[in-house]
Image (cartoon, rainbow, N blue to C red; front, side, top):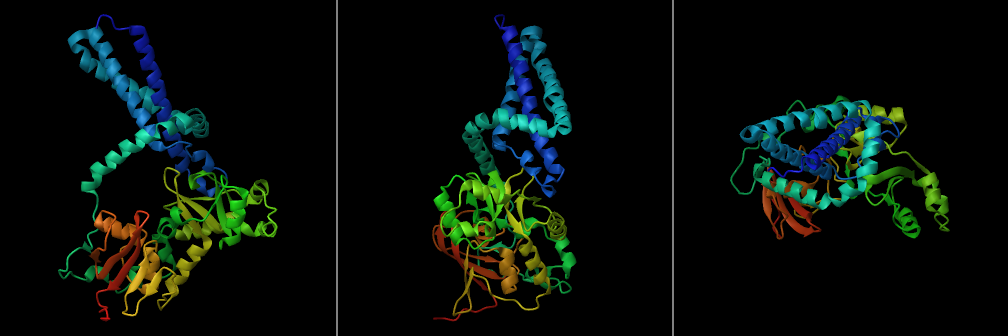
Amino acid sequence: MDNLPLGPMLAVVALLILWSGLFTAIEAAQHHLLALRPGTRQGDKAAARLNFPRNSLILCNTLCRAVVVILCTLLAIYAWAENGPWLGWLISCAVLLVLADYLPRILATRHPHAVLGFGNTLLGVPLKILYPLAWLLNGISLLLLRPFARKAGVVKKNDEPQPDYNDEPHPETPNGREPGIHALDNITVNDILLPRSEVDGINLDDSIEEIIEQLRTSQRTRLPVFHSDINQVEAVLNTRQVQHLLPDARLTKDTLLAACHEPYFVPESTPLQLQLLNFHKQQRRLGMVVDEYGEVLGIVTLEDILEEIVGEFESEHSVDNPHIHLQSDGRYVIDGAASIRELNKSLGWHLPSDGPKTLNGLVTEALETIPDCAVCLKIGRYRLQTLETEDNRVSKVLVWHTNTVPIAV
């Protein structure tokens, strides 16, 4: 202990406290910008996005603080002998709280754009390199939490009779929802969004020939434009503005970008009634739905909200859904990607929609695994049998209501 290099150790401690403060300030700046609901203004949301995985930021901040405590403890033992450990812990915690937590958060709140921009520029590449380690540690954390994960109470994997009262809507609220357009206050954008895995978008990293072919076959009028990943969305394209350039392949990436407009970001917790007003106010028809960390969850369109409103006044259910295939025995073969809310609307069912948004998600959450063979399960008054599994998801499910007796064939 007498040979401790005090000068270098103090310098390392000071440097680690500085880095920890920077990591804290970057995270606080992003939270502050997201709390301002910048998604309702054009151009602001891009500044609230991290250019590196947030898990890497958490990993580096934790490591810095741990090393600071260790070094301070060693220095305190050298200075105060037997009183060193608790004094080192006390001093290091006080210094970290003031210089690496409270002070950085105050500065980040006052200058969020500057802090986030500086962090993205300085740390973008190093934290992307550290992501595999952060991903591994995050995966271990999720694995440890699996035994405590919430299980759907309506799922039963046996044939014992179950009470049906949870399956029926309240008699005064048709379809289990508050009647009228005011019910949109109880439905958020996250409930009706098109998941990012199903979003059709233009990847600027693709060749112009591939982009032209995609535009020729796309059935959508508005497409997100991004680099590599939809989280790097840069614009939204109205395909009608470039249709005249497609027949003779005169479209270029510069022309495509010139026809685009700024993306419009929507917080996932926005009520539909408010978002309908926001679409009108911003003169937009498509929004990129993001979570509290700025990650893109999917898209929502004006047409989606209007369809939800129209659904409030429909008195009869229609099975006009490409994901639903009626069988001769009265059962349905349904694609795993089908939205649970759409299934309930089309078939008049009441599958639980407060958790997973798709049928595949509902099945895998209930089974807590991806089945590799046919599996039967019961959810409320509905029976489900997996038929096909591909690409780590359930792609086909046979579903029927227990009141429906299949016809023997």
